[in-house]
Length: 296
Length: 272
Image 1 (cartoon, rainbow over the protein chains, first blue to last red):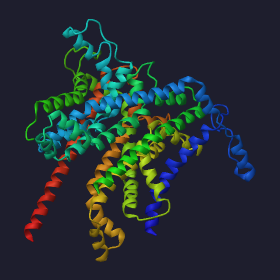
Image 2 (cartoon, helix red, strand yellow):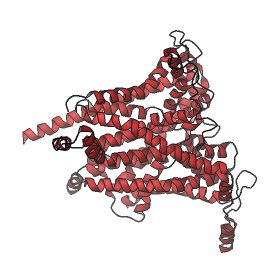
Image 3 (cartoon, rainbow over the protein chains, first blue to last red):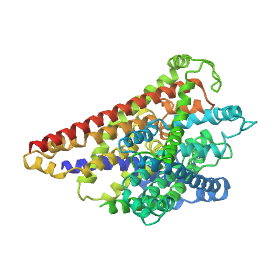
Image 4 (cartoon, each protein chain N blue to C red):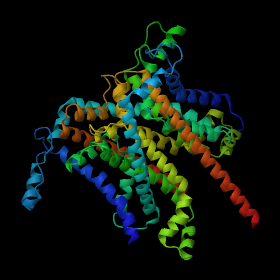
């Protein structure tokens, strides 16, 4: 009896506030707006029995999804989100790997401190960390002041409100998600494997490429997914650091909802975004499962 | 292995410089006299004073704090229950669906979570305000809590619980007297995680808050969209300071607990 209550409370909570809302989005993505504000047509009329339910389903249509394919804004935004996510994942990997590697090679008594230094920004407000870059990257910003002062450039660079700023912001804020899984897979690595490879005639670089990289692969894969999946739906970074040329689907959905107030289209955008994310999420879960099985 | 090679030293130095310099610049310029954020005009704390006068920010901070306390407490209770059910609950109807619903919100884009919750609240006619933000925050952060707590539950020895049951504890007593003290560090860090997630959330709060309740991130976001301002720098510095002190205290506390546990284990081993 107690067990049933223990299971039911979180279960019902998630059903009501996670799964049901989800079907509401799906339903609204298939309906038409009636005078811009709910109710939407069709509404489910349960009192009419089967006829009402049949009526409800017959009125649902894919009009909003057709609309998404007709206006090239949407598919361009999806494509560009995926592109930005892929490029910034690679950039984060390039920046993060050496840091994770150096942490794993550091003397053991320093490692907890380094770990904390990596985790601390993660606890600090995301919004503030993105905001910090606005002052650095703007035309009169600290970076341009520094470059002008050292004479590297003679006219200020335009970085803020471009895709470059978006990439910098993503690499900066998502770096801990990349470092931590790679670090944990490198830390477990047996150092004698490298020594053995070097004894057998590998150069350091060869040993790194042939031993270290393959052994850290689970960490690399986990880190890449942890960065890529949330970046595809990112909203804060493109709206603060990006410009009018930055198209990302999270921002489009936000504007569709808050500026255009077209809720059915916003819902359709959300449904398609989820469909895009299903593939990487499933791959990620498989990778995690394999990893836990390998550990056992 | 005992010392850092030059390559590792360089990558650590550059890496941590990259992570910390933006925040350090922000902190330094929050003490800038000038209204122009990019020009240094001498030390001053006047922006902190102005911040304390800004009623809109103070109201939003108060809303944010209340939402964070309520939602993280609720999320900790629900998340711990969910973790317990997942790890110890055995088989029950719909277990796969349940674990799916625990993990899915972790990777769900915030815009989708926010949109779907808003449509639900409108659908059932619930007025948007503090209550709806609390409901939304509890839902996504309970999943983080249950991941943290279940990783702790998986690693601890189940026979301790069984021993308590054999010795005449009711299941509730066994949980309160044996399980809870052992998983307490995970429960506390789960609460802290839920608390910071709630403090930090902009996107979901924007969808689920109404005109009657605005949270601090929403206020910051609308101010920041207009550009960099010294007042926001001061506010950011305060927030960074609070988090830093909190994280360092928490890590010192856990470190001390670990040391004490080691000592206890050693004492127990030598007593045998």
